[in-house]
Image (cartoon, rainbow, N blue to C red; front, side):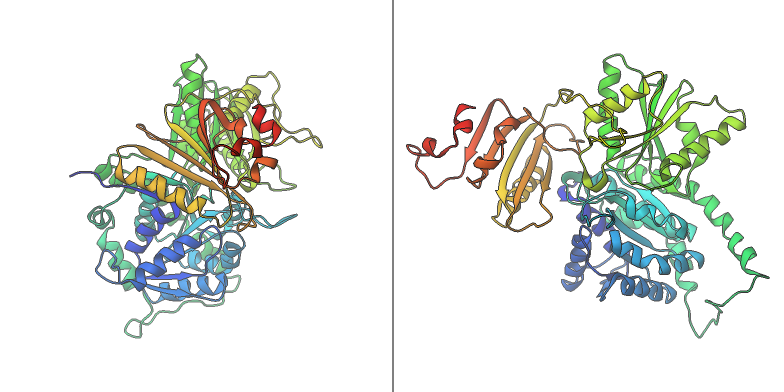
Amino acid sequence: MAKKMIACDGNEATASVAFAVSEVAAIYPITPSSPMAEHADNWSAAGKKNIWGQVPRVFEMQSEGGAAGTVHGALQAGALTTTFTASQGLLLMIPNMYKIAGELTPTVFHVTARALAMQGLSIFGDHSDVMACRQTGFAMLASSCVQECQDLALVAHASTLESRVPFMHFFDGFRTSHEVMKIEALEDGVIRNVIDEKYVKACRERCLTPDRPTMRGTAQNPDVYFQGRETVNPFYAKVPEIVQKYMDKVASYTGRQYHIVDYVGAPDAERVIISMGSSTCTIGDTVKYLNSKGEKVGLVNIRLYRPFPMEAVVAALPKTVKKIAVLDRCKEPGSAGEPLFQDALTAISEAVMAGKMAMPKMIGGRYGLSSKEFTPAMVKAIYDELAKADPKARFTVGINDDVCHTSLTIDPNFKLESDFFQAMFFGLGSDGTVGANKNSIKIIGNETDNYAQGYFVYDSKKSGSMTTSHLRFGKSIIDAPYLIGENEADFVACHHTPHLESVNMLKYAKDGATFLVNTPHSADTVWDTFPRPVQEE
């Protein structure tokens, strides 16, 4: 059967699966998860059916707390229910999340991981919100690209039904949620085959009904509460095995094999990075490049973060590893280390105490807060730091920290070789540039044999401020979740001529690139309207 290739973003890829396997979606749109809710609402209104031939019901509430309460109620009634959220919205769902998990109720929350309001509000992406939910009892599954958003959404829905542990499927806000990529679409028949009907039936039979009275939501005293909390342990112990089973099942239909923990790199690597989310695509490509130049480096990509797969993490590490850098996309002020670092350190320390390996040098770093860029040059800086005799125990990468001096030095000239066409468009919010470029990259992805990627940078003020569109296309899969850099663009377009006064667009153009200016002036007079520095360049 021919593969069905489509160009879509992470939100649409995720929502298509969530809608197909749900009967109820409770929504309260919040950036950058809003498109998932909007897709579900539109599909429901248009009468689109799920894999069981029903039209899912979508309820828009007046807050995220109301959406979470609706999810909890619908689950108790036996309906397969989902929701979409991020950031402060996710935090408002935490009280219900504790109840849903405590009652071992299957559901999936799809989260476009986003920064929380700290010293300032940010609508952009990092892992601050999902890390605030580690204690709720939700399993946590991370996707690193648009294709994974679709595939792992299905893994999450199938796994929650069998394990009874609720899942949070998360991916990087904007960087993955709004990135347009060409992916292989899952057919409804595949989705239907992956979902095991006997667990759907079991879920329905646990619903509240007068026909089978049960007691729930009681108040418990010290004589039984502790024991009750411990009774969930066997359910969580089975989650890694169940998730891997459904990853294998998806692979049997699609050929795309995922593991709860994956290793990329040299089998005899001495320096290894542990990370999750979209950063793993950048690290993985850089690892392959560095190893081709004679380095011995590797990456451990963690997809299942909760329950933390300690044995799988240790098993993924090459026996030769001497130094490890663990990357977190969040900051936990005052802690001994950020969450992923502490989990990885615990897993490896226990393996060392059990005599399974020698203790490597481990350091922890922060990157990419509020969608700060994370590039191959930064990956190389981390491996270079690991190569030092005494690397920094805690570091940051991607900023210049001249206060605490935690930042690593980056070589701006380090770039990966690419064989795809790269184009940049500078526009003004609401002038149509972004919409036109989304259409362009989808046309290239849907109507040609090219793989395609589109990413769009907005100011948080959106309308009226500058937008930058980054488009890539070529004959091979494009796994580059970072912006087009200086001297890399084959094509640069200025759609708003006043930008020429304030933005050095030509620095992005490689030698021989095309520069397009949208201007009311004629070809004969336009040169005189350019600022002198632009003329000189």
